[in-house]
Every structure is written in C-alpha cells, then in structure tokens.
Length: 244
Image 1 (spheres, rainbow, N blue to C red):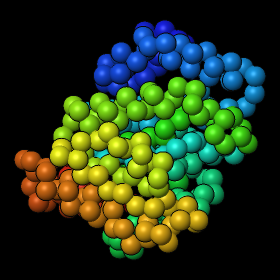
Image 2 (cartoon, one colour; image 1 turned 60 degrees about the vertical axis):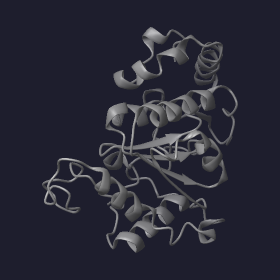
Image 3 (tube, rainbow, N blue to C red; image 1 turned 30 degrees about the vertical axis):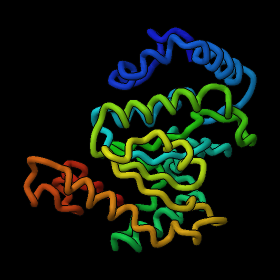
C-alpha cells in the first residue's frame, strides 16, 4: 500500500468518491503500518485482494451492502470479501449459516463455493470494517485507520445513492451502520450468523427475500421477465439478487 493517493490501486469510481480520504493524516499512518506489516510477517488477505470488495462492485453498481468486521485470519481463507473464502476452502460456520438461511428463506440451495464473487458482481458490496489482519491474530489491524476508511465508504453510499439495502448482522455492524439514512435506504438488522448467536434472530430473519422485494419495488424500467430470479439468461441483470 502506497501512501500516495494517486498510486492507490482502487477501483476508479471508488477512488473518485473517496479521494479526500487519501489526504488525511490517518491514511498516511495506515498505509505505513500496513506496508510494514506485510514486510514483517504473514498478513491476510494477499495484497492484491485488499480492495477486492471495491474492485468487484463499483460505487454506482452497489445495490446491497453487507458489513463484516475482520478478514479471516487462517491460511487461504480471506479473499477480500466479508464472510467469503477462496473457492475450495471449507465454509466457515457463519457462511454455512448464511447459506442455510438463504435456502430456508428463498427455497434455493446456494452453490457450495464460498468465494461469493458471484454476489459482488451483481452489486453486493461485501465490506469488512478492517481490510487486513495478521495471521492467527484476530483484531490485530483494528483501530489503525481502516475503520475510518470504510466508514467513509458507507457514508458516501448513504449520501450519494438511493434505495440501497444494508444488511447489518450483529452489534458491530449495527453500530457501524448508524450513519445510514433510513429515509433513503432499507436497513435490515439481525443477530450475527455465528453459531453463538444465529438462533437469536438471524435464522428466520428473511433478509434475502426482503432485500429482493425492496430492490424490485424500486427498480425502474425493467420488465417482469427481466426481474425473474433463477433465469440463467438474466442472472444478476434484473432487479433482484440471485443469492445462489
């Protein structure tokens, strides 16, 4: 990570809306810290995946935002998308529970691939609050500046976009989403999908069908045929997200 904003390898639309962040003191400190961490030890995700959530989901294409906290800190897990893992890696418990809720809610069985880039390419921003972590050390890169950067991204979406869906699971995500304008966007809150809390309101929350209903309601200029979920010809192109 280079401290110079002009050299940040961030998707162009996001780079434009977040340009002010690169001139703030915290960014220089954060960049220096992250660069040194990669030089000293094993950090997840790999450098090319730090901004993957933004890369796969440009600012003007975002329709749904899911907020996570920390990247996974185990080998070959973190891939730059919250709750997701690299293809071929065993699904973590939280992701297994997310897939269970999708099946219960929508009656469709998600693919057994935990990468989730298929969601991101449909406009689902899978954003961790902290974008890097030291191997086997959860929370090691918290309060170094990442939270300010991702707060700014959420604020920009709230202010400059309309009719987005924000899925806030767990107290941390709810607190981070406090800045979202509820008059312009749909904010759905539930317990975290972790095995420790999933029965406290995540299972049965029906967030995925509610998100699709809202997106369909606020989508303009599309035919009913284009909005049909499950059509292989229109997957990701209609108002609704194909959560498989």
